[in-house]
Image 1 (cartoon, helix red, strand yellow):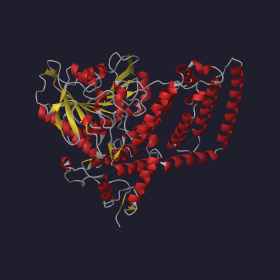
Image 2: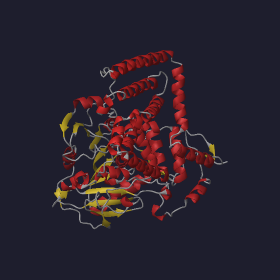
Image 3: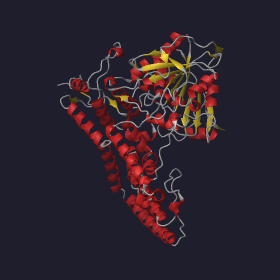
Image 4: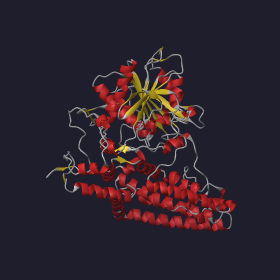
Length: 613
C-alpha cells in the first residue's frame, strides 16, 4: 500500500537533484494530469497522517466539487468555528445574561428613538462606524428610514458583542464567527433593498424606472461572467494605455520576461534597480498611465529600472514551486543584470508577495556570501505571518486542504476564486455598496487605470500556492528560520544590506504592523515608512495625489527594538507622496552617474507575458 499526505503533489524533483528544464515541458491534457495523480508516489511527511492512495483521488474530487458549491469556503472550518463559539457561549451564563440585558436595552433604545422620530424630533441615535457610509444621505434622516437604519445598527452592535469576548473560544474561531455574522448582516442591511432604501426609490422615480432596467442588465452580465468564470473587460490595455514606459525585453525564460526601461536622462546611476512584483497580479500596477507610473518616476530620476513580468500560468504549470519562482525569477533576473549589462551590484525592490520572495532570495544569497544586492526595498510585503490580518480568516488547515483539492483538480487557483476572498473582506464596500450603486442607483463603476488593472487577473500554480499557504501562512517557516532553500533553512537575520520597508495605513492584505515585523528580523539598518492609503492605492501614490501623508524613521541595526505603536507615536510625519522620500534614499545607494547600458533587447516592453489572458 502506498501511503502519504493527501492533497499535496510530490516534489518537482528529488532533493539534491538538478532541477528539470521547464522549457521542455509539453502541454498535458487535464484528463491525463488527473490519471497521473492516481499513480503519484505519495510520501509521508512529519506531522501529517498517512492516507491510502486508493482513496486520495476520491477525497480530492469530492472536496473540489464541494469547494465550488460553497464558494471555496470549507464547511468543516465554518462548522468548527460555530461549534466552538456556541458551546463556549452555552458554558458562559454570565455572557448570556450580559447579552440578554444588552438586547433589552437596545430594544428600549430603539422604541424610544422610534417614538421621537415619528414626531419629527429624533435624538439618541447610534452612530455607524466612520467607514460605514450606507446611511449618510439626507434621505436616511427622515421617518421611517431612520427607524430602519437604527434597528439595523443596534442589531449589528448586539451581534458583534455576541460573537466576541466569549471565554474559551480560540481567537481564530472568534474572528471567523464575527466575520460570518458580519456577512449575513451586511447582506440583510436595509440599504440593499429597493423597498427600504429611500435613495434608490428617489432614483427610480426620477428616472421613470430606467435605473432598474439598466441595473437588471448589469446584474445579468455580472451573473453570466460569474457562471462562465470570465473576467470583466479591461478598458486600459497594456501597451496602449498603461505599461507604456519605453523599454526592452532583455531576457525571457519559461516563467518570466525581464524588462529594462530605456533611459531618458543623459547619464544614469551606476547601480540599477530590479523590481520584483507579485505574480498574484500583473506587474504594471507599478507602470500605470504616465502620471501614475512609479517606473516612469524612477527613470526620470536617472535610475536604470528592470522589471520582472511573470507568466500567467495554466494547468500545465501546476508543478511550478516557490523555489522555481526564486530560481527562475529573482535569481535569473539578477544573473542577467550582472552578467549581461555588467552591473556589479543591484538595488532590489519587491512588492507584496514579490517582496516576500525577494526576502527569501536575499537570505539565501547572504548565506552563500553572494554580495550582489546593494539594498532591499519591501513594498507592503510580509516576512512574518503570525499576524497576517483579515486574510487569516481563510487560512487554516481545513480551508487550505479544500483549496488544495480545487487546485489539484484544475491545476491552479482561478482569479475569480481569489477575488471572492478579497471582496468578502470588505463586503460592505466591494459587494453590497457596489451592487447598490450598480443595480439600483444606476451609477456605473469608476473607470480608471487602477480599477482596470485590478480586473486584469492572473492564476496561481497549484504547487506554488499550496507551498505559500502552508509554509508561510500556516507554519510561518520564513520568520522561524525553517524555510528551506537548496536543502538548508535560510535566516532573515543573515540579511545585512540596508532595508527600506513601506507599510500602508489601511492595508487589509498586508497590515502595516505585520510589515513592520521586518525590523527585528534582519541584521540591517531598516528605514520604515508608513503611508496613508491601502494595499494598492497607498503604493500608487505619485506626487500631487490629494490627502496623502506618511511617517518615516530609520532604525540602526544595533538600536533597541521599538514596537509599532511607539514607532507611530515617535516617527516624523510629512505631508504628500512617499515617492520622493524613497527616491532620495535609493539615490544614496545607487552610486555615481555613468553611461546607460547599451546591450540590445529581444523585443519591446511590455513584452508578451503581460498580455496573456
